[in-house]
Image (cartoon, rainbow, N blue to C red):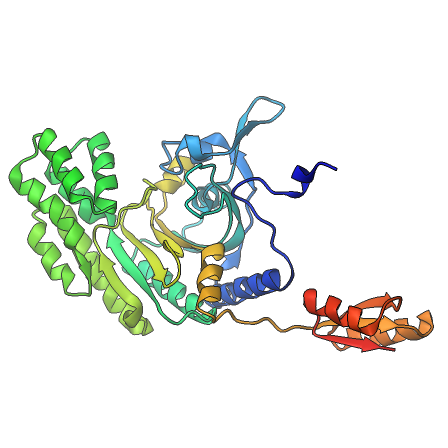
Length: 390
C-alpha cells in the first residue's frame, strides 16, 4: 500500500471523535444566538463561477483561488469567501425585496496560499449577513450579535475592535492618491509600517500635511476617546462623517450592554476591497490573528444587479476552537454515546438497544468477542459515555 494515500495534502486536516463533537457543539451554540436575532439559514454552492470572486468584486486575489474548469469550459473556483456568494444569492432570489433580509450560514471555504504560517487552506466559517439596512442600527446589531454569540460559546476575554474604512479613504482622497497608491498604502498602514508608508507618500509627492494625517492613522487605536483625536487629523467631510458614524454605533452598542468588549482602530483596513464603512475584528488570547471579522459592504450587491446596502461578519470556527481549547474553556457537548456489549441472545440485545435509543442514548451494539477491559479502552478512545455488558 502507498503510505502517502493515508496522509492529507498540506493545509487540510481530518477532524473526528471528541474534537469533532466539541466543534459541532460550538457551531450549534454560536448559531443559536444568530437564530435568536431572527437570522435564517442559507446554503450556497461550494464552487461558483470565477466572476463571483473577480478582482472587480474586490475579494480574494486570483492567485489564491482554487480554479478548475467544467465540461463547458467555464472557469470555476472553490468558495474562498462567503459574502460574495450570499450577495449573488440575494440578488437572484430577492431582487425586488425592499425589507431587510437576515441570513446566517456555516460551511467550508478554501484559500490556495503557500504562506500558511500555521493556517489551514480549508477552514470552517459561520457568519451572518444583514442585507437592505443602511442604518447605524444595522452596524450595531451585527457587532452586538457577534459579541453575544462568542459569549454563548464560552469565550470570556476578547475584544471587538472597530474601524471605519471611509475615514482612511477620506484622507486618501484629501491627499489625491490614485487607486494603486491607496492599495499599496493600505498594506503599510494595516501592518503599521510607518517608514514604508512615509517613503511611499514622499515618492508620490504628497504634501507634508497629508503625509502627517495619513501617518497619524497608525496611532488611532484604543478606547472611545481616540475618536476625538481622529477628528483632529480629519480635514475632509468623508472622514468626519466616518467618525460621527462610529459615535452613533457606540451609543447603540451601549444599549445592548456590550460596550465593555469594544475598542477602536482606525488603522484597520481589510484586504477585501468591497468594504465601504464600519469594519470590525474580534481578538482573544492564544490565537495569532482575528477569530472573526466583518463590516459594511454597501456596493457589493450592485455587482450582481441589486442595489442594496449590507453588513455582515464571519467567525473562523477553527481559530475559535483553538482559542477555546488553549484557554481550557471549550464547552463540553452532552455525551449520549452508549456502548452495549452483549453475550446474550441477539433478540434480547436488540430490545435493550431499542430501549436505550428511546431514552435518547446513541447506542452501538457489539457482540462480545474480547475482554471487558478491551471494550472499556475502546469506549474511552472513541468518546463513549458508558459501557454496559449484558
